[in-house]
Length: 333
Image (tube, rainbow, N blue to C red; front, side):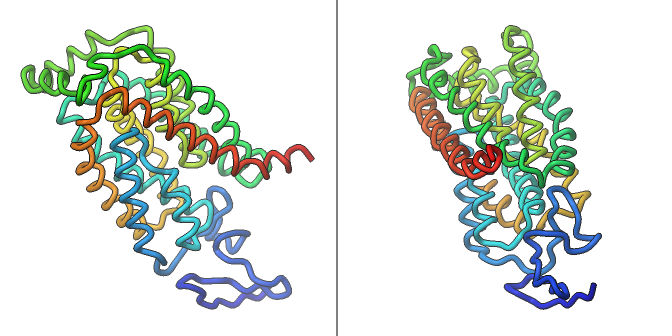
């Protein structure tokens, strides 16, 4: 089969003899272009740099208030502003959110807001299942079952939203800045090592299985679609971990997401399914926005933080379900 190349919007579009054209956003283009999710390696400049910067900014601000690394903002932007394939969008999103969450995690860790035992439980199980998610994306990423992940995840998370609001009051609830002020004072007085060791001593053991289980589910969804890891972790902690204040939940979720995403991102980097220029724009802008907005978020009372996350959870779940309706219809046929 003969093949010609022509430039469209800064990307190589391949013309197949007798079969029309297949862009880099879908279909098999060459043995070099195959990868996770059937995507292709993309060459050329990225369009819509302004949109990418705005996506990074929005992701950073959202992360400071919810603990989510911003995939729900970044993925739609990449779909709209670029011609990247599905596999490249997944890999680029993972790398961007890794950079963003890493910057925020270091900042929160220095403040003393990261719950280290919870991070270890979430990330250890999540890292193990990330490989399974990436492998599943390679094998069934183009099947009709793959599209059922988002609506299924949306329904589960929607069911958790009421628990977020009904959760009993945690440490520092209702005060300006919540329990974050107390934690930061302890971190300052005790020093990093003693403070961290005391976290292990005071940790509620009843949350061990739940954190490990939800971390495993989040790791799988991150490896499969670069989506849902932070949302799942934060939803569980906001619903059931009464000993962790909401500001600490945000910091803990970002730290756990960083560790899990490092593994998932490395898999996609190895496959060549990452647009590095997009990562530099969104990750850099998002990281700076997260650090800046985190100081403002610390002044928000715990109850308002919890309410804001519950509202964001409902909206995110509704979007996942709505986008999954066509997949549900196809599956029913």
